[in-house]
Amino acid sequence: MVERGVMPTVSRRVQAIPPSPIRGLVPLAEAAKARGIRVIHLNIGQPDLPPPPGVSAAIAAAASQRPIYTPSRGIPELIAAWVRYYQRVGLSISLEDVVVTGGASEALSLAILATTDPGDHVLVPEPFYAPYLGIFTAAGVELIPVSSPDSYGPVSPEAIRDRISPRTRGILLCSPSNPTGTVYDDVTFQALANLAIEYNLFFYSDETYRELVFSGARAPSALELPGLESHAIVIDSISKRFNACGLRIGALISRNHHVTAAAASLAELRLSLPLVAQLAAVAALDAPETYVAEVITTYRRRRDTMLAALQQIPGVRPIPPAGALYLVAELPVDDAERFAAWLLTDFALAGETLMVAPLSGFYATPGCGHQAIRLALVQPESVLERAASLLATALEIYPGRRA
Image 1 (cartoon, rainbow, N blue to C red):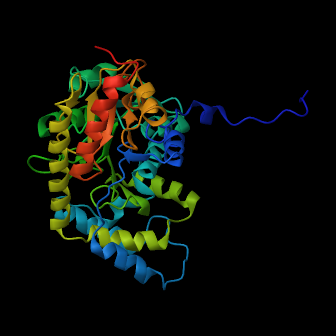
Image 2: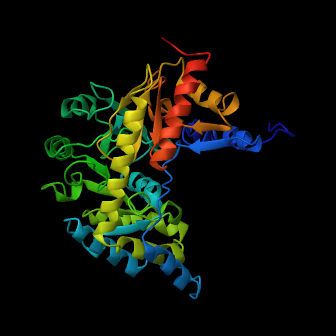
C-alpha cells in the first residue's frame, strides 16, 4: 500500500553524487561577503584574464541573428574552427571527428554514456577533477581510482595494469592534470595508451589544459599516437586556454566514428547549443597563437609567485605544478575541509579572507587529501601574495593546527 502524505524522494542516483569541493563552500563565502568581508577566490578555475578580443565582437555581432535551433552536433562554422585550431597545434583531424559540446563536462558525459554500460569500470589516476565522480555516478559507472607512488605525480603503467579487470571499459587521463598540474611525458603517455590497445579499452584523454605547459612544448595528445584511432576519445574545451568558461563550449573528438555517431545521437536529446556561444567560440578558436602563449606566460609567472610565497610559510608543502592553472599545497591542519570552512566563518584580517578547495573532494579513496588544498592561480600576482599572507596568518591561529 502506498502511504499517503509522504513526500516523494529524489533518485538514489542523485543522492550518490558527492557534493562539489569546488562550490560546496559557496554559502559560507556569500555569508562572509554579507558581513562585509572581501573573499579572495582561489577555489575555482575561473580565469580573470580577458578572452581574445574577437569573442566580444562576435557576441555583439550575433545579437542581430535570430536565436534559432542549431545542429545538435554543432554549427558547421564551429566544427571547422575546431579543425583549424587542431591543425595549428600540430594535430590533424577531420570535420567528422568533432562533436561540439556544452563544455568539457558534457563532452565527458557523452563519451561515457556512448561507450559504457551501468556496472562498467573506468580507471582514473587520483587525485582527479572532482566532477568526474559525479559524471560517472550519474551514468552508473564505477570510477576506479589509481594512485601514484609519490601521491601527486604520474601513475605508472604497471599501476594501471594491476587494476584492469573484466569489467574495465576504459582509462581516463588528464594531462596537464587538474588539480595537480602533472604533465605526462611522451613515454608514459604512450605506455598508458598501449594498455588501452592491448586490453581493447577506450582511452579518454581530457586535454582541456593541453597547451598550458610551463616548460617545453604542449602535452602529448591521444590524437597523435599510432594504433589508438579506434580507442582515443579526446575531451576538450575553450574555457581555460581562451578564458571563456561562461560560453560553455567544448568538444568530443574521436576518429572512431561509431563513438562520434553515438555521442551525436545523445546530443540530440538536448537539441542544440546556444548560437551566440558557438559563434563566439569560433572567434576564440581563431585567436592568434600569441594569445595562448601570453596566457601560458601569465600562469607560469603566477605559479612562481605563489610557490615562492607558500615556501616561506612554516609547515606548508606546495607541490610545483608543471602545467594547468592550479597548485596543490599540503597544510599543517587537522582537516583541510574544516580549515577551508573556518577561513570563511571565523577568520578575517583587515576585512579579508580567502576561499580554497579542499583536496579530499578530488579523491575516490577514503581518507586521502584531508590535509591538502587546491589553489587556482586566477588572480594577479599581488593578490596571490596577499592570499598567501592571509593563509600564513590563518595557520598561526587556526585551532586545529598540527605541528
